[in-house]
Length: 243
Image 1 (cartoon, rainbow, N blue to C red):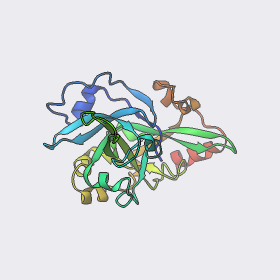
Image 2: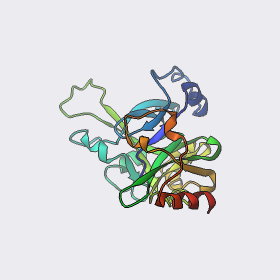
Image 3: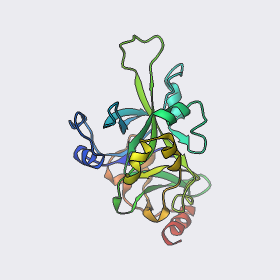
């Protein structure tokens, strides 16, 4: 799964990287670097508007299908499996018509470090090469809400089988899209299906980080500083770095 991630881009970097144009060039208010983005919080995704322009939007992480009775289901839908996303009732409509790019530059996973201990790892691309998570978005509004109420927009991150970097840590990984793949993800359903695969391991790296990231209230660049893993996690780290 993918349950925590980072987004260190400034607004100017995001505009340049995602080729944002008018009328969306104006900054999103209070966009700041995030080092511990957690489910049910709000983050930036990029989708196409009706004129096929890339539109940055702030949405809540945890997809709520349009037919849901309430918005509480979002907490259980932070991820969607690539293997079943086209058929599952909660995701299939969004997969056909509502793709998005989840703005990120790294993510965390936890490896077993002992009988009751887990070691967190920060996972990213080598050289900080730009990428986005493959995402889907939905719009929901309570049936009893006034018709002029804007409703709630939410997103989910797709996951797939892990590559050689992620496998020693976790049995799933997010679907990662290089910048060259972004037009295809925002394109046709067939294009999206072709991108539902693991990102090349040779283009990724990871390192152990402190356990402070486990608390959603903690923020800051110190969360991604490398530490020496302990216990069984050292074996996983050695495998990842040295093969």
